[in-house]
Image 1: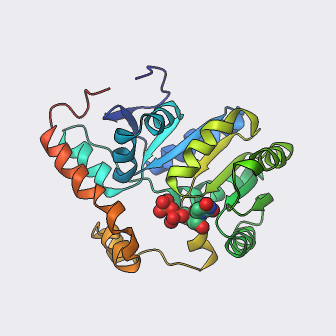
Image 2: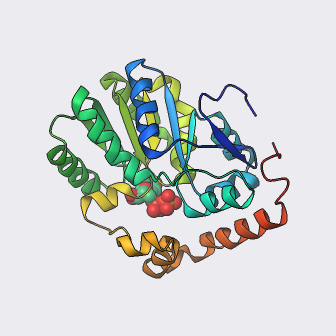
Length: 252
Ligand code: UDP
């Protein structure tokens, strides 16, 4: 692992999970924006860890990002299980809102990329209303192919946002950011998965009680049974961590 990580972390199969609390994460990212330090943030869960273990390119993307935060109860559990606990879960959805709140003071410029055309339009308008001092400099849907990458990258780059949120599904958004990060002219770049769907009102986040019981994964499974195959990665991850207990933080 690169020893250049600028934050305290727990390595889980070589992926450096940040030990920063939500509040400290926001402070850390605020500083990155003020210094205009290009920062790819990944909010990672066990499904992404398992994907990285099966796909060398995805692992590289995870390791080369600038900050990996523990989105997903399973990651917090694993760190605790191997005796190097993380202070708390930092979900992408909450981090997005915390950054918007912090950014009001500095009038940050934000670009939103991803989700369907209706969802992104509604999400942009709701966020602008909720955070009037933020400047949403642009948005576009996430349904485009590689042939359109150039045009999308150029548009974002010309607007030089402080924050770029990308919602195209974890397996697409993170490699996309990694590929174009040097040309996006954006400071903080972060994948936010299904967050725009929730913000637009199109889909609902699990209720508080479900979140506090740590069964958000079960809620999503019931709502979207098509996730079943993908979610098998959760028990697989748990079993793997139990089996590898001594090695989890030592494997690179
Ligand atoms: N999405 C997109 N382009 C695509 C595929 C997905 O913009 O080619 C959007 C989708 O509309 C949703 C978000 O990406 O808003 C997350 O999708 P999904 O829930 O499938 O992702 P995951 O759960 O894998 O992160």
